Image (cartoon, rainbow over all chains, first blue to last red; front, side, top):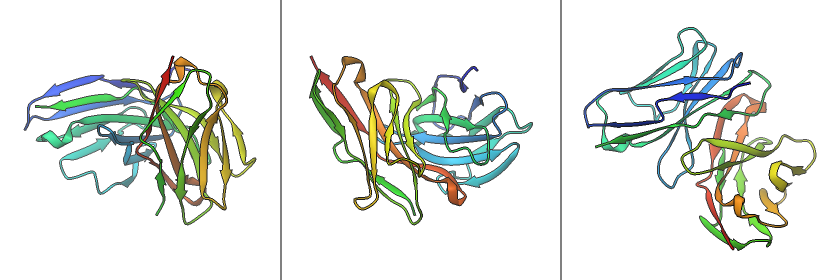
Length: 114
Length: 115
């Protein structure tokens, strides 16, 4: 099995621009999670999907953030009007579904907002 | 609400010495507990997990951890440190067995190995 993949690995943008990240989970994994990790901190939960349904969103996910998983396979995370505080590593994880406890993480997308 | 506290943001040990990374958790229900390792500019790799079976859990790369309910702890150990163990380690708690999907992580411990 190939692991979770994320694209791009690095993104540098100017404040106010929109950015979109992509996550491809492990094949046939029904659940997909997004986390954000700032420097010196552990990852923080943002949201998760069961197939195409977004089942939970953290209050960290402001109105400028939107996540989709339209066909229940890959997911995108968009940040509109980026702010310097959005600079972080965005991690994606997947697992096969209900009753499975382990989340498998991708390499992350590092966002730098200038 | 679930939470994790990792004592010691930086730990240094000599090569060949015992590694001990501390983790205490808080959970309103019996938790599942995890240790992940993160190498620079990479994602998280699962080292081991506790899911209410044996309290002493063995993981990859010679690491193990013991779940102690009375102490609400899940400390990570390795008898003999290798240079390749230098990385950041995260303890995480989940209440997935009670319908709470998300992982809650500690702030991490950076392990340095002294040659």
